[in-house]
Length: 131
Ligand SMILES: [Zn+2]
Ligand SMILES: [Zn+2]
Image (cartoon, rainbow, N blue to C red; front, top):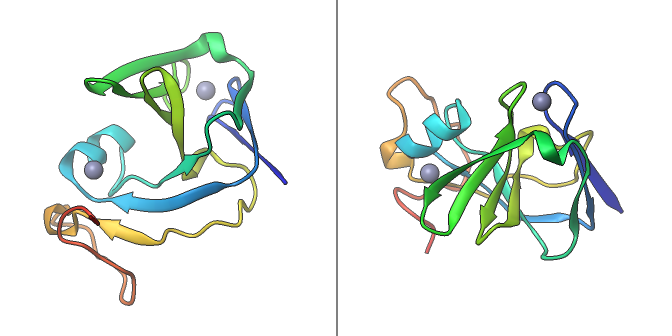
């Protein structure tokens, strides 16, 4: 099964030959800013399974810490993926199309969550990282 994803304006599209794994949500203050949301929603892709199918030239990149970055649409601002040493390392769940058959498995850095966020009952949480 292949997955597809795209940004809000649809100019940038990608394809994943396979599935995504290790879906997680990080509630730290950095992720709130980077994902313009209460938390990140992110899953890893297998090396070699990810390809840009349209609009790669419209991507902008931002290095979050040495070797790691985020790539987003320079037209509409959707954050599409995370990179490690220049290669796509994972995707934001919000930009996946349809039902990717993945669920967020755990929530990290909930001790740093925004004051206004309510964490749902019954989800797996960690005050800091999961390791
Ligand atoms: Zn866009
Ligand atoms: Zn975070």
